[in-house]
Image 1 (cartoon, rainbow, N blue to C red):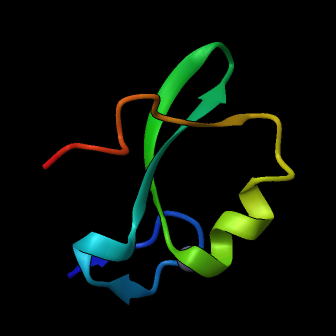
Image 2 (tube, rainbow, N blue to C red):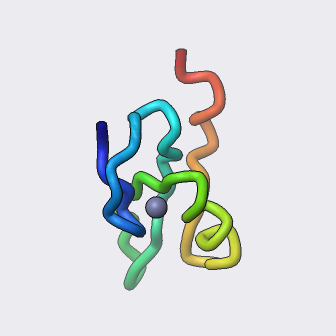
Length: 56
Ligand SMILES: [Zn+2]
């Protein structure tokens, strides 16, 4: 289980999406749960990692 960086709830690692948040030109790795993904999709400071799709 890992913590969602946005809502701080615990989720299985598989369903958390690794995203990058840009704050003051620095990149921070965020683990975002499905419900928070719909929120951060509207936030231009968040980016999906390009190579995340086929990591297995
Ligand atoms: Zn969340």
